[in-house]
Figure 1 (cartoon, helix red, strand yellow):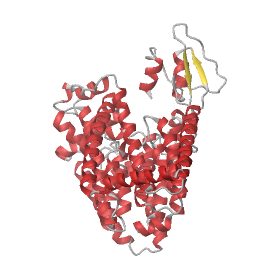
Figure 2: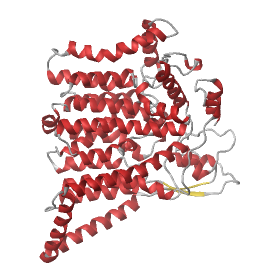
Figure 3: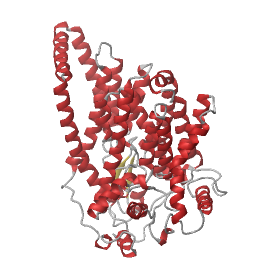
Figure 4: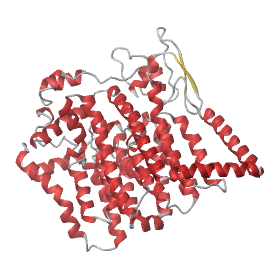
Length: 551
């Protein structure tokens, strides 16, 4: 958001602080030195700004000079629907044209059904896809500003993998400090990238590929276990990470995405490999992000309700505690501020009194206008406030088929998503977007698996599921509405063969296009910056820390 504001309004004046208007009647003072700019929002509302403060305020609300508005969408929608309708009725009345189109389409399909051709084209697509993804991730890694949580996470985990000393320095509490909240699984790629290059940019890029590799590993397992469509899931495994709102948290080596990729996939393998899944759940919490305990609690409570039995409780606890005991042994030998009991007590106090928790005396109610949500655009609110509710409805409506395919996971998934969703929207005062990943990742991955398996009872469920996925397109939002309308056309126009396969291909294609357009919009190719010389010897040194924060 900061980059967007500066690109529209220019650099902020000295000592400028973010301004929040107390009411809609606030009158901004004109700045004679500021060139007036016409701005528009999604609903077509216009504002002429005459000062940096006013410009900042409106851009922060989602206004832009060349905003793609709802009226632009409507024009495209009318043209698309009109064209498709005319073509359909034109061809349906002309049997000769319709016959030849069917012959051409079948010939095209047969070409791709050939295994050798299909495999070659798929490999070619994966290579091409990764060329664009690498450039996209690299450009993002260069443009995002330095972030204190990145330094803390990377430093603590570099030390952990080198010496098992989970330590980012005395300024944050020393070894195994309770303030180190992103565990070792969060940043394995970042650590490898740093050890190879001593570059924060390469570390960020490497951590993206670590997250993608995690997802691909689970996809391969699920393909073998449930006989899923491998092309659709593998093709999306590289791109699904960038669909997650505020996915750059993964570049910063923060723990939310890695933890939830492991946790979400653990749910799908739970009834096939129960013991392994429990270990994975525990790893995602204690070696990833403690907040992942919230979806786990929801999952397990609803699992007990679903199974109507406590017979597995003891054996489940044994396997779940294996990673926990391992972590506590590390704490026992390294924690500098007391005993293991004191560590646990301090950790609980930190969680309950954290500014985002919503459990302390000063956070009895969570006001959206005082949280980060006040800076979100309409798309983010639609994605993270309303899409999960649509997902839960779809999940419940199709629970019989889903449970038959994936072994009674519907109710546990409802619990796993509802727990963090309700906490985020009802309790958390800050509502930081990265915390929404504790339900958005589970929702996105589940929808992909359901779409892949074609489990829905009605076309409306398939339409809503595909539309929710498309809604997470980030860079070129003008693609969203035409794609959703095209999905509706494919689903509801009769006598269309291979409609589900075509929709899956369309989803892959649109997400791919969304990633390729930024490549051609750049003024010049991105280059990886030089390293910080102060950090080449050690991340934990004060000189490195100062150089990072001043960069």
